[in-house]
Length: 333
Image 1 (cartoon, rainbow, N blue to C red):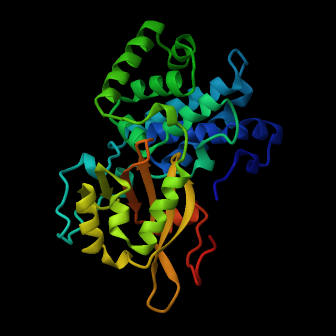
Image 2 (cartoon, rainbow, N blue to C red):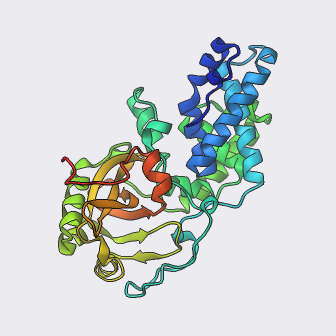
Image 3 (tube, helix red, strand yellow):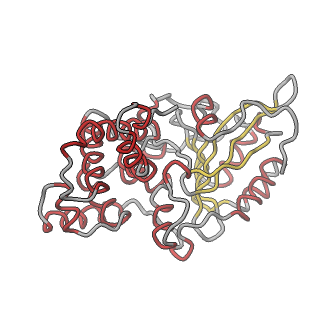
């Protein structure tokens, strides 16, 4: 369990003031770092630095701005000591469906990780801001952010996700408005090259009907129905392996070939990365179902699945998403 500053036993009123910002700071640090665990660590370090230095906080800026300044510096320190997080599609070409080799296994700090919506997104607020918040934690967007230099990354998040003014952003970063505007322009150009295409009219929405149809096809292992839900450029990938498969027919071939043991799986829905997601359980030889993957589905906002990412480290992801460690019977629908 994450320790909070209110657990420190001193100045509980200070701890309570700081803790009210934990969720939004976690979202900011997650976008900056691309990892859920790293974001937790960064926020905890932010809270501890703020708690220890609270007597020096002079109130010349808001408490929120002060915390974001600390969090940004913590993230800069972390990024200076780490390699860029990736997705399999950013490492090499697609693999033929019939080859059973899953590819190289990379350490967890090299992957863009999933995150529960409840850990990073507000439960209520302005609908437009909430829509932008959801879009900005989608896997493709978080992965694209990792290609930005840290300061450009911070500028883009502060200006376009958090809606800070150029002057506020410049003050936080200790730079000029002109520098902030230049960094934002360069960041936008880089993200534009990453082809983050979605139907903007459906930003911030989760297509529950599409998820229902996908789960129905997947649990029945009806590949014809499943293929009908995929866009022509859809990909399947499975961190921590470098394997990825491209195209609906290749995805179906992989599921019927190397992935055939997924037949008979059961799924429990969760909320992850502002997207459709579920915990997948494979049938166990002794009955029931055991954890196999935390799956995040990406879509184009127009009724087609564009990405299937199966995070296979169930020991990490199932507890984080509150998923049970076994299904003894058919899950409730």
